[in-house]
Length: 141
Image 1 (cartoon, rainbow, N blue to C red):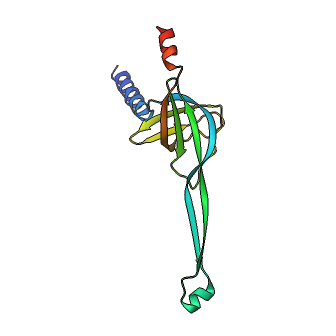
Image 2: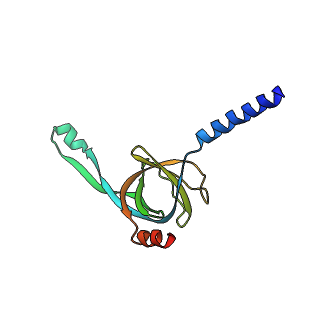
């Protein structure tokens, strides 16, 4: 009988550890990806002549930097999000369900279908309540 108690206690501890690892995710759908301007990049180079003569002749090239911006729709809110790691952004599958959680100032997203089910950090650019959300809530009552 004591072996059964130890086995039960071990199962409960293991279940508690597994539950602690699993977060409470919200569900949404990735509706769209847009390329949006997220700044300007300036590259400058001094000419050899300018270096030798000591002049400030420097040519600068300015280029607009584009970032991926996704629209994530939930039951009540539409989020516009951008990858936090803009140097190595992963292309997400549009039209697929996604799970996310908000942690401090980041949105942690994972996509199981068509993705690798990894958690990735995103910056929330905007949040808008869905226009049809109050009607859905009223029809459920």
